[in-house]
Every structure is written in C-alpha cells, then in structure tokens.
Length: 200
Image (cartoon, rainbow, N blue to C red; front, side):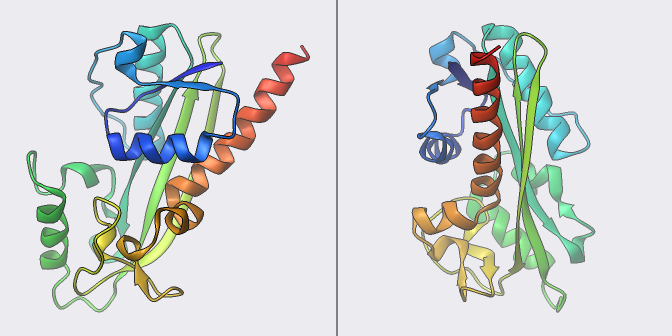
C-alpha cells in the first residue's frame, strides 16, 4: 500500500516514518505523489484539521493519505495555544521565539500543567477513514533545557523523568510522546484494516 504523508515538516515526517516502519506500506512525501497544495487549517480541533489535510492530499493524489495535527494545550492559558500552536505569536517566528513567548506569558504562573495532543487521520479513496489520538501530560518548564526534539520540546517538562522532552533520546521520545502514542495506535488500526481488506 502506498500512503502519502500529508506534511512538509521534515522532522514530523521522520518521526512518522520511524514509528510506521514495521508496516508493509510505502510512505511517500506529497511531492513524490505529485501533490503540491497548501491546506488551510480552518478546523476548530486537531482532529478536524488533520481530516482537512488528509482528505485534501488524498483527493489530489488519488492515494490514501495520512495527516497529523498536533499542539500544546496549557491549562493556565485556557487550553492555548491549542490549534494555533504552530502559529503562536504570528507567522514567521522561530521555534525558539515561540517557546520564549510561552514562557513570557506564563511568568508568575504557578499552575503549569499542560499536554501535547496529536490527532492522526488517514483518508482512503473509497471513503474509509482511520483516526487515532495520543496525549502526553507534562508541565511548562520555568526555563528551557535540552537540545533535542523541536518546537516546544525544550520547555515541556516531564515530572516522572525529571527531564524536558528535548533531553530525551529519539527512542525515548517516541515511546512517550503524543505523536508516538497516536502513531502506534494508528499502526494497529492500519494493520487491522489491511488484514480485513486482504481477506475481503
């Protein structure tokens, strides 16, 4: 099965390929499938945005497409930045500028609980869809630590490990991250889907 990854984010694509490598699927980038589109994320939830992206790439390529939409929900910010995580503070900011803005907005805040959320949607040309969601609970750190990962990883503190996400190895991160959890659940569903259609 050829599966188009509806993402241009190289780091996200690398994570997805690592976790889905055990499946008998050939994962293509949109460009490898002849798709060059930008999908406007107008949904009100991560799941809605993932569906928009996957369905757009599926229609454009004629092949099954999988999309992830994920972000950070901070309790003290009423769930923000939420679906605006990648655009927090406006377009054009670096990852570092975004987490610095988050720390600034959390200054003096003692309630620092937060979570990373990942929603994955796979759309098939026959109209079928598979969905999966993963959540990783943590806290907003008071200062950045670590150089690994990307996005808000340096300020996402994991109390049980006494480390930020950016201090974990890629293997450790995949085990506990929101996207890792969502992708493993998705992989199970995709494996079952393949078996069902193979025997149909």
